[in-house]
Image (cartoon, rainbow, N blue to C red):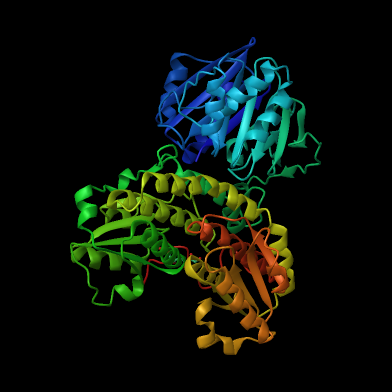
Length: 613
Ligand code: F6R
């Protein structure tokens, strides 16, 4: 995850930026940089490694000035070297850019610019942005238009900050999709910008949060927000409370809501540095995989609890389909008291946000004692689960404070998809062509999740219709069956509404008896090879007087005639669709809980980390 800070005003701009970056270092720590504009020239300092290397550089070669931008990086494209560190400067030194996110189409854009003679100085996707802005400025466009034209060419989720030496008192920033936010801090004759408010909270409490597809021109005396076509937008200034909890929630009412909206950013960070989009390969060095080890493994057992268990159910579909490795998924609390068939040819993958769940750890110890190769997907680095394992994949979700798990679910799905790709590469089940197709799906994912989040109002409206309902049935098939179970769990735990998640094909074997007008059905009916089957199951529910809400693919013209309510999600590659399709479940549960006046972040009887049996 990357962090951005910017400043224009009377203070020492590099000091403000460096102070802010320190508060954002948790977001990325493989390289950092700062650029200052003074007397019509940019001076840039960049370093690979943690921020203190950049601090040392600045002590040796200090910078001064009143307009600066800085960045801490978590690599997505290109190794964490100094050349790949931000800020990036255009070929003629006119424009400087920092960026969070992924430019999905950077390869064709870079090829086009290279054909025009642009010489690239880094391996990053970001550099196409700075070179494009310069190309438009050189063609005679004003900076604002050049930024707008550039953004129009970018695919994917990005947050961008641009400064030009020709416009020394101005900074432009833009948000495209949900690659992390941009908070603009308003001061007295000074202005701040950061990816997260703690970076600038010591200077101002008055913040504007840029929405998706908005752009802002920042000057010392204020900011002017437009849409991407340049139409002025009215924006609200939020007064942020000083206490650390409110400050950490920022513009959101609850941590769960913040964490739901943080998912595109979290997914970008999870992918970061692990995927080679050009060659179609994934690398997971912390897994310590060798050809001998992988060649020796005959089956995989995924062990987890709760939401992490449902994540494992999706992971099974991914791993079996991509890597063709037989996989079972077992509740940790069951595994630990079974007499499981585990030996040296078994790999066991635990999935755990906290890394401290007692049942998961006990199950892992049992599997390890029987000779299994132990892997874990974990959010809390340094936790016991990591210490028990031979290899790990970090979720990179960032702190998850709401008790109901959201971003740990989606990031662990992405981790399992990447694991499936690596195992597929090593087991020879994935051709280079298929590899490129698989990772291209990953590049789109943050943006697709961002698009699903944009439907927030539709979920809020649905919640206002159903918040008094006491029973729900959630249905899905294939990779979306676990999504149905996760949807039901979210509703149960934060709204205290009884909900069951079922594989839709099983409905006729019992649960159909429950269906009447008082028990609505929430069905995932997105476009995939099981679409027709889902439609026929929806019809069965309708025939029994059921009220059906469908999560459908945007543009589906049939579904409206089949069900009572439709919420849409963008079309995603089938194995990654659960990452997108769970968003409506999360937001629906959230809005229902809010409507019912429930304690969203700390639901009754639950704990974030279940360290007891
Ligand atoms: C549900 C939830 C729990 C956890 C479960 C496992 O929203 O958060 O079901 O998923 O307690 O926790 P971890 O992943 O920390 O092992």
